[in-house]
Image (tube, rainbow, N blue to C red; front, side):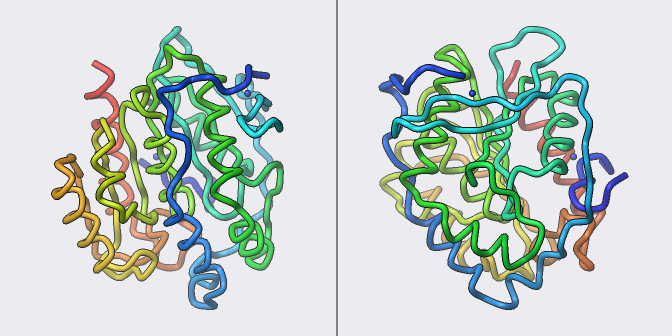
Length: 279
């Protein structure tokens, strides 16, 4: 099993133009603030560079779809074995939508019996070095990412009920994607991603949030996670908060500080979270 994103295995659009008025118009700037961590040497070194890997899928396919800014978005889709209106939107971490993400997205789809779309916020750029990843993450604008996400919702269709999941950079964008989805969102899952700090924006959500964070992490720090829990309480929203004695990227086996026990526990809770809300 591959090292980089095999943690889930160890346990874990040609669409029309955006016209769904129930979707939010824009994401928070908190994700862009998090992206600036790429300038921190300690943050960069906390991510081991991925080993070369090519994934062959019998059912997954690359997709393109119109985005609300008049351009085209890219993603990777795997349809469930049985027809369903449920989707899981997977948001890649700072390397981009590479074959590791595709492999794990497909596995999650199989485990849940759900359609999967891995959304590409890097516009077909995939990083293989820390320097490339840092540059790509910092280059993502809120406006373009929001347009891509809106396009993915339009591609999935108005009947789609969407869960979101992501790690690190993608963890923050998982929450923002769920917020953009409005009434179509069924739940959001964050692995050590940047929380939304605006309580007024949190008051607008209509879904539960499942969060996995590390007590020895600084991206985000325990203090930021504490603030997130307080803000969710102030907003009157449900946060299922899970904290582990681990470091950043604890669920990534390529991390020297990979925490297998925490990773397996998190994945079981992820499956239960989604299945409960698919009933």
